[in-house]
View 1 (cartoon, chains in turn red, blue, brown, cyan):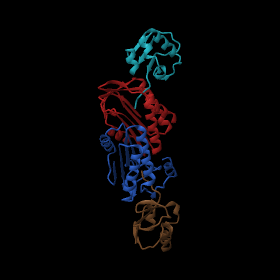
View 2 (view 1 turned 120 degrees about the horizontal axis):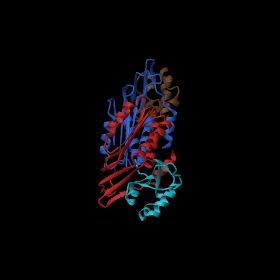
View 3 (view 1 turned 135 degrees about the vertical axis):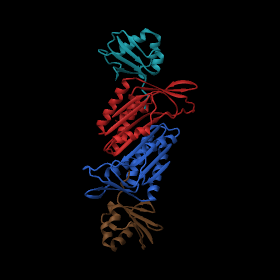
View 4 (view 1 turned 90 degrees about the horizontal axis):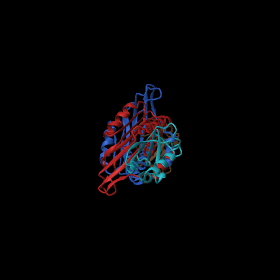
Length: 147
Length: 147
Length: 82
Length: 82
């Protein structure tokens, strides 16, 4: 399992291929890539992502351990950026490898739901009108109840 | 939307990056990659994949149209190989792009469930003991009932 | 005349991937009955109909589907893609 | 002495990302009450406690959690990662 919380951009396709090459015995690999969407008005200048160094890594590692045990994952990967990102930039990715598709999908969705609401990241959208902290969605909190 | 049924190997990471680059406005991209698993005994020499040219493309295109409409997908991609594959080879991939993660995940799982049981492909495992057609699993047929 | 296609182990049991069949069968089931009556290899191949699927002009159909206007019938085991 | 950290809009309202606080508060809620009593900016920042989360030594906790042995308390709005 690999976890990286980093300001640097990364190549999700190359990471996915590297992950797959190491996941010996896997029949199913699922990846999720999150991208910076523009605002409805199309005027997003940047997205600033703040995090809590130390706790971020601890919290994500715990989620990954839980996912691996619950779905017998062969491997899992989480990469999450922080700092200043532009519209269209890759924010983060998750990859899961399992023998069969149901486990790989479930683990990837579990990791995403937990990353959304339990990993200490905060997004701030910067537009010509100013900076605006993204509010957590009730639907994201609700998504956790299914696990 | 792009669909390819082909004997040639392909690079899933490069395909995923290319897909993401074209999915303007997407906030979430999910990929699934299916790989040839070895047999339990570890003696798989090859997997031969037969398909029904013409129907394969029609059936998958119909699934993709349905997924796009149901989950407001920004884009979808299906690549599926046929012919002779080796253990560890990539069999196929699905990618979905949507504004939010729930739609991208649901559409990718829907496409996988339908590809498994409704696209005319048949897998034959070749071991030193001979060739053996892979039997369809009841659980794959059952998976369709959730959609 | 109708094109009849076979895939996977059905193709192996019947021994050809496709053939043209002269038939006036009204339904898929009638066509199967004609084939089964023709030769042992068809009888063996179609012995367990529950384990077979059929497509008419490349669309999945049932064994009770009518053949009127159909140019291509395909028989095969349950699919195992993905 | 305890390290107190603030993130996102809470950090902006309080004006510092972290500070050391001399306290003998028994629980998180007691610590918040002390801070709120100290200065207006804390009162404003902690006005709606339902919209805040707390971590003790980098583990999520409740406002009723005891502070005994804790070295680092962090306050922040609901997380928006992924």
